[in-house]
Each structure stands twice: as structure tokens, then as C-alpha cells.
Image (cartoon, rainbow, N blue to C red; front, side, top):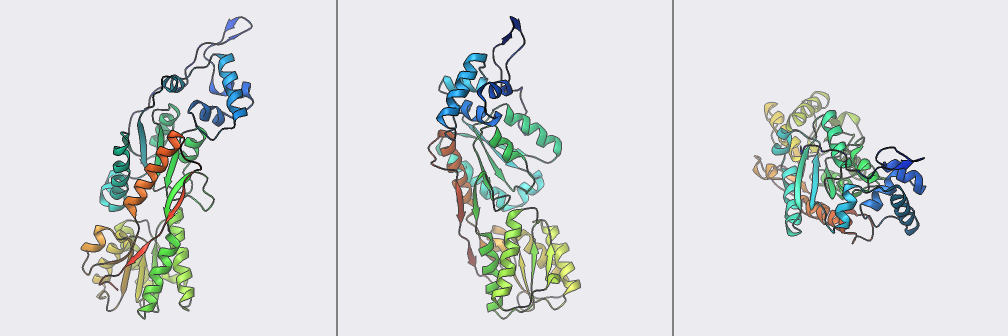
Length: 355
């Protein structure tokens, strides 16, 4: 992760009753202007999402207090950092093991290269690193932030928003997400998978979910349940196994499913990587794919195409999602976006030999 620098807000000393009391703070500017700290940050960063009245009040307060942050000085000089951060809250091992992250990075970097903007890849693996990156954001070292693989309790997107930094998420934390995002139709992915399996005559269809503190995983589970209902199949919670989007997680979940429901004849795994783990366990148990158990994943990654048999998978336009994220962020940075991005891209079922 890039090293965190000193706080960005540096201004001239202010005077009270003839005494110098140190540099004015962002909070003092907000109090003088009668607005929130986030509004001051947005004005300093040139965000278009500030009313004219608030912008004028902040401008007066800055002038009266003599507050000149480094970021504002750069803006007055007509310059930006020309860099954005891509935040992935995962380990290096998972980053390079999962094609999803690499495709997102490829899409983002392609779009940013055309705009002559540097990409700073940041991995967050601990609470300490999260705190350091929060300080880095507060120092205004980048023009904007892209977030990938966000969990429901992740505070960093809201911090960026409070600081007035443009931010775009890959996916959402909830249905009421307030930060701009580019997502895919995860509910539709689950419904399409179950509809396909049911159409092939499968009646005991299980699912291996991702971590349910991630909105994408909850949506794929919702799609599974809707698909089961639409196919007229009985709902059975024993056919739902929780995992974590890893191959080992897929293995553990598949073992649990076979113990609880040995008659399972179809499996929808919420990622190709988990499906690969499930396939290994099915083979160990003497179950043939697709003869005994049909198997579907999500992503349509190289993992799906290289499996034996090749995996039926619900394709997400992953690189396109990365490009859309970067494009939306650049529009926020330059103030050319009429509204925060709220994009949900369609998915597509790709049928192969595993079903």
C-alpha cells in the first residue's frame, strides 16, 4: 500500500484577540460557514455537488480564517494529482489467484491509460492498514477512489464521500447504496442458473453462496431462491451452504451438502472458483459431472473454460465493469457527470459440458 503522508490541511496561522493560535482547521472553517466538514471538503476539491450558497459561505470562511490547504493551492494552480486509488480489501494470494480481480484491474487500467491517469493499487488486509489508508485519503493524495469487493460494514467509501473525494464501487454494500457504483445483475444470474438446471430435469438443486455480508452474494442467493420457486421446486434450507468465494470454501461447502443431502443432483456455486472446489469434492465422492450432479458457476472466467468438464457459468462483463467504473470516476473528478453513477450490467448464461 502506498505510504501515508502528513495531513493535507495546512493553512496560515489565525489570530484570536491578538494572539496567534496556530493553523485554522477544517472544522473551524465548517463552523464559521455554518456547514458540515464534508461540505467544506467538497468545495475545496471542486465537487459540483455543492449549492452556490454553501460554496459562497465556505469561500468567505476560508478567506476570513486564512485557510489555504495544499489541495486547494494545487487546484488554484490548475493542477490535480492525476492519480486514483483502486482499493481491494484482500490478500496478495487471493488477488492473483482469482481472475475476477485481474479482469477488473485490466478494465480500469485501460480506461485510465487513455486519460493519462496513474493507478495506485492498494491492498487492505488488516485494521491497521485500513486506518493508514483512511489517513492517506484525508491527506488528499489522489483525485478519486475505486473500491472492489466491498463488504456491508466497510466504512472507507463513506469516508471518501465525507472528504469530498469522488468514489465509485464495484458492486454495492446494500440496496440503498449512496456511493456511485457499477454492478451486475446478480439476482438474474441466480435465476438463470436455476432455470437452466431445472430445465435439464434437476430436482434437488443446491447452492454454494459467497459471504452474506456482501450484497452480491445475498443477491445471488435471492436469485437462487426465486429460481427454485419459479421452477416449482420445494424450498429446502439444507440445500444452501455458505462459503467465501474461495476454492477451499467451495470444497468445504460441497462436503457439507453431500453429508446433508446425498441426493443432490444440481449445484449453483456463486463463483467459478468455488465451483472448481466443489468439482474436486464431487469426484472424490464418486459423483460424475454432469451425469450425477450438474454444476454451474458465476463469472465465466478462464477457470470455467479450463475445468474438466468445462463449466457452465453465468458471465459477468467484468472488464467492462472496470472500464465503466473508471469512466464514471473520471467524470466525477472533472465535474462532467450529471449524477452519481448507478449502473447494473446484464449477465449471460454460457452453457458448457458441466450441465
